[in-house]
Image 1: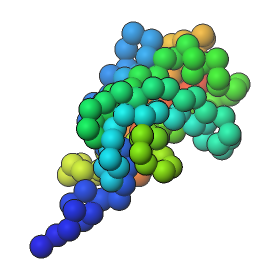
Image 2: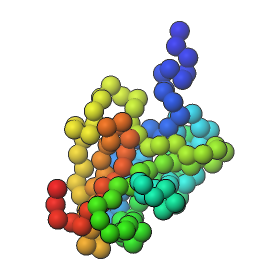
Image 3: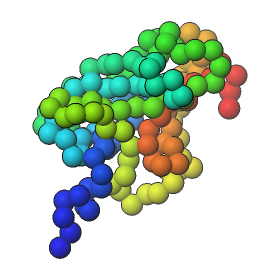
Length: 145
């Protein structure tokens, strides 16, 4: 018999839906290995871990829903191409959980799932899955990919 950890994998924030539109990126999912989905969405600049946005994550039980307003993200993004990684800091849990999609049978989401880019403050923001099937947001000057 498999234990709960084998069926759900390591603690993380499992992404169910990503909705990039209307000047924000909305994410819906559930916390795996944490008592609550309510807490804080942490959007952290890769390579500069002291630069982050902290946004409310609302939920019920282990479910969460949060949105990244692109105007705020644009204001916090330094010049150049950048990547923001997403984490959930659930209430009642020490530390953060990386947002990703790991509990389905689809591997290599980076080449399978694509989301539309949106513009804010002259920059382009596009959510994407990394090679580890974690969710991040790419930012560039809006020149296209």
